[in-house]
Length: 87
Image (cartoon, rainbow, N blue to C red; front, side):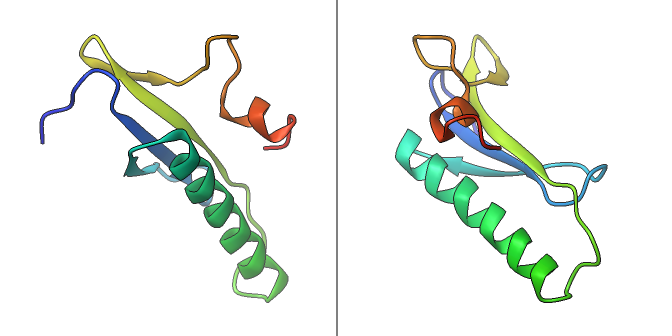
């Protein structure tokens, strides 16, 4: 699949240090929903004994000038700044 400037993708690492997996999204709202859902799922697994522990992380990337870079808005804030610093 060819990537176009402005394309977005969520990256998620459910257990550091595993490699990330990616979910293509169309909008910032869709990215936020995906990240919140993945975080909730990891928390559910931990609280219900599916995982003994976890250290997860994720973010949003945008395709610019031939490469994926971390997304930020016009104010220099990344995805987690939109969550009030929670991440």
